[in-house]
Every structure is written in structure tokens, then in C-alpha cells.
Length: 245
Length: 243
Ligand SMILES: Nc1ncnc2c1ncn2[C@@H]1O[C@H](COP(=O)(O)OP(=O)(O)OP(=O)(O)O)[C@@H](O)[C@H]1O
Ligand SMILES: [Mg+2]
Image (cartoon, rainbow over all chains, first blue to last red; front, top):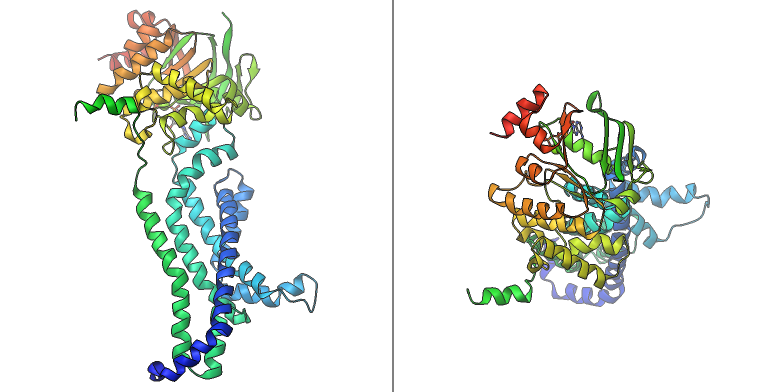
């Protein structure tokens, strides 16, 4: 494969193929990833909260969701949506749009991981916080909103960013069901021309363009999460201290 | 005097363990009640049942004649009681001022400006107006507990519950918190206070109850406890904490 890597002619061909193959693939991957991320976050918050609720039923529901989707391969899940879901939904000849398939597949799958991240984040907040809120008369939802989530968010942002990273890379599974994503076009152009080196290097570059900023973001959030908030002092105090300093 | 809290036949079990056994207690408006007792005797459980942080297994709690139950306890907490915890439990993501104004703004629907004015008044009472814009982690333990007291004051409740407010503090910070509480005791607020600070009890308490193994064993004025406690358990306990 590496033989033709430095063949200028092949790179020339690749450049010509960019608008038709790589750009639409890249955009599809980007769109899918973005929407799947939103879906995963919503599922993560809902099932993360379920896992920490007092209701046994809600906890059981979230357990089933999390265990099922974490412990079966994403590829199987996507193939299932592709081939079985239309039948289950009734319409024999019906096809689920590739974009929807991608968002569902990767979103629901990553949502299971995000639920776990959010659960551990909520559980990391000391019980005294909830008690203080309840003693003031806050309801469960108000306690979550004003007291628990704002503290949780700092802890969970770095692992959530890592999940987002995995999500982007996992969208490449769509190629299996002709998902019109970056990986699909990579395979397609590669096997059409036989220029696999060009095909895959370019593809990697495009994935890298999305993933690297997210990885940097994750690192930044990690550093920021370790800092404690620092408040400004009131003017009087600064003045009072002024003489001493 | 009007009664503000009534506890009737209160029992609390944890599994097979009876943490509270048939407690009966009334507290009058403006009264300062101090609860003492050995570790694990059920003092925290008792005051936590009053604001329903613990759900009673049996028996009833009334505040101003209204029964506190599973349905209305948030409402009751919002309208009648505040609590000061051993571990302060300030909200670390909010500034001191925000800690004080959160409940008034979100629960009692006071507008922000008014809530902040009130918060500054409360901070003044605990001597910490200069710390309004700091975060809890920038304050000493004693200062944090004073902020927690100010937070309790800020919702203007008639009843404040204290669960060992000085036990988590370094010795040199205990007094600043007690001073604030002594000042507070001069007002008509009802205080129910679990503490082992007998000096404080002597100074402010109208009544002291001694809890042992989930029961109220002895009850009386602070003087009674200092001069002639009756029960053997009480004598043994006081012997330990007074020396
Ligand atoms: N959530 C719980 N589950 C099981 N047992 C509990 C629970 N909370 C309290 N207990 C038990 O109930 C008893 C009373 O506890 P409580 O916290 O009321 O004691 P306390 O008098 O406040 O003690 P301390 O002075 O140590 O704070 C203890 O024996 C404790 O082990
Ligand atoms: Mg206790």
C-alpha cells in the first residue's frame, strides 16, 4: 500500500476527488457527529438522573439501557437499526435515512457511556449539598438544577469531551451500511482507484481535524476542573488591606 | 407561649435498629432548646426528623400545628425551618452572597436587589459583610459556619435547627461561632440545638434534654444539669464532657 504514497499523479487525482468524495463525506460525518452528540447528551442526562434517583424502577430502566448498549458492539446495533427496524416499524420497503441511522446508532450508544459519566458526577457531590438544599425547601428538580448540576458539570466535562471524541471516530461505523460518511467515501474512492495510501491518509487527516480540537478541549477542561473558584474581594477590604501591603 | 414544634410518639428505625424510641417533645415559640447525649444516641436523627431530612418510621411531627408529612415537607421547610449543619454544607460553586440569596430568590420569590440587601443585613449580624463576594473555600471553617448561620437567617424562619455547629471546627474558631449564636439567642427565633458546648447551653438554653439510646432520659434547665442531674446516665455523660 505504501508503494504509491509519493506518487504525485495519485495525489493529483485525490485533489480532484475532494469536492465529490471527501467534502460531502466530511460534512456528513460532522453533521452526524454533532446531532448524535446532542442526542447522547440528552440521553446521558436523563438516564444519569434515573440512575441516581430514589425510584427503583427508574434505576432499573437506566441499568438495562446502559448495560445493553455498552455490552453489545456498535456495529451490530447499527446493522440492527438498518435491517430490522424498518420491519419492526411496519413498512416493508421503508428505508431509514442514513443520516438518521447514524445519529441514532452512535447517539444511543454513546448516550449509555455518558449516562455513566453523569451518574458518577452526580454521586461525587457530597450528600450534605442535597441535604442543605432540602432543608431550605428546594424540590428534587430545583436541587439538581441550582445545586447539583452546576457542581457536577465541572467534574464531568473532561470525560464527556473524551466521549465526544469517541463518538466522532465511531461515526465511521456508518460506512458499513453505506452511510455516505467520510469513511464510506474513503473506502469507495480507494477501491475505485486502488490508491489506498492517498485515500486513507486523507481520511485520517479529516478525522484529525475534528478530533484534535476536541482532545485539546478535554485537556483544557481537565486543568480547569482542578482549579477552585476565586472571588473578588469587596472594595472596602482591598482598601483596608492597602496600607499593610 | 405558643408552641411551635410538637413531636408525638416519634420512632425511627434503620432496619432492625431503633434509633429513636417513642419520643415526645414540645418546643415553644422563641424557646432555646439544647439537645445533648452521647455519640450515636439519636440526637441528629431527632432534629432531622423535624425537617423531614429523615422520614419518621412512626409518630408525628407538627410545626405550628401542621403535620409535616411526605407530601408537604418541602413546603414546610420552605416556610418554617432552616438548618445549620456540622459540615456547613455551603454551596461551593456560589459566592457567599449567592449562597444567602439563592433560596429567597428562587423559593420565596424576593427580587434580587431586596434579597441582596437582606443578605447584607444577615452578613452584618455574623460580622462578615466584607466576605460577600468570596467563595466558601476562601474562608476559614469558623467563617464558613457563620455564613451558614447567615444563610439560615436570610430566609427569616421562625425555627432554626443546629446540628453540632461547632464540632467540625478547630478549637480557636469555636468561640466566634458561639458568639454569633449567643447574639442570635437574644431574639425571638426558636432554636433547637444539638451541642456539647455546655457553657453555651448554660448561657442561652431555656431547657436542655438528654438523649440516650433513642430516648429522652432527662430534661430540665441548664442549672439542673449542672447542679443535680438525676439519672446515672446523665451524670456519667456530663462527667465526661465537663472534664
Ligand atoms: N442512615 C442510617 N442508616 C443506619 N443507621 C443509622 C443511619 N443514620 C444513623 N444511624 C444510626 O442511628 C443512631 C443514631 O444516629 P445519630 O446520627 O442520630 O446519632 P447522634 O446522637 O447524632 O450521634 P453523633 O453525636 O455521633 O452525631 C446511630 O447508632 C447510627 O449508627
Ligand atoms: Mg449527630
